[in-house]
Picture 1 (cartoon, rainbow, N blue to C red):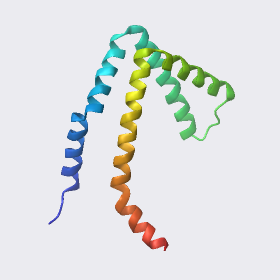
Picture 2 (picture 1 turned 90 degrees about the vertical axis):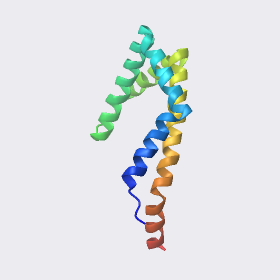
Picture 3 (picture 1 turned 180 degrees about the vertical axis):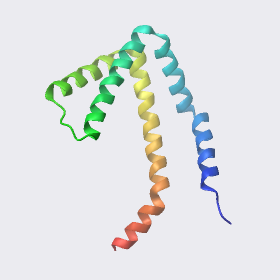
Length: 117
């Protein structure tokens, strides 16, 4: 019996949306968005992150000044109660997604792992 992996993927998407960690993430994100100063601070932090990621993807060097700016930004947002909680919730979701990715990739790892032996 063939399994439609797309149907399974959509079921997984629905399960993630119903997951308590995701619901908590949504709530915390809404709280940050509703707080003007927190929203601006979080947007600034995200802009810095995205710029550094873009530079890395383009193979560009990241300056020491940019690293220091990013570190200061991280420290600043972590001190903000609402953003700190949001970042913790993001971390939990990221860990869950990594675990799911490991499960999904297992057949390929087993296949290629067997070829290497």
